[in-house]
Length: 171
Image (cartoon, rainbow, N blue to C red; front, side, top):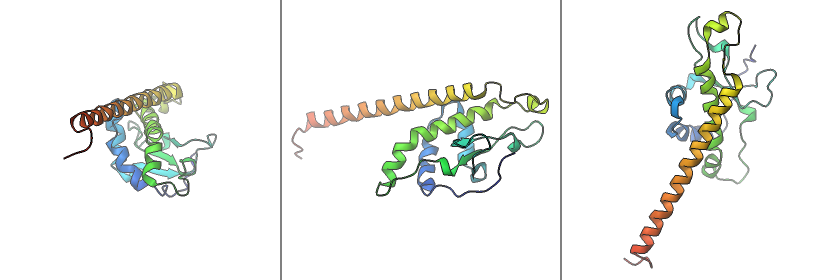
């Protein structure tokens, strides 16, 4: 049973949310965007029993009806990254984007993996388990990192081209 104690979102959540919505989550894009666009589908809560270090989780208790899937992600407020005093919110958000979007991908894998029929029979309702979710998360982080590297290289080419055309910044 989940501790149904509501928590407040981290102070930076409203600045983070638009950036999370802009991310490409690959095959999990529809699931994650649906959740991010509906505030009732993001639940800020305490960690589940047995997983005190969880940053996020999904719960079969959130499945609606016998054939319905899970449509909520619980975010454990106390385990979210904390902004250091004096650090700019923008820099902090940029520094946590990859890990938070990876966590969302991990949970979206569980949502897609959920089998209500197995749950009804008392079997593990997540056939690919943590292994599948971790693989999805690592794949997302790898692709996200490659996109950032690609953007950095493109930025360098753009700067280099500008310098070649106008090396001393003259107009």
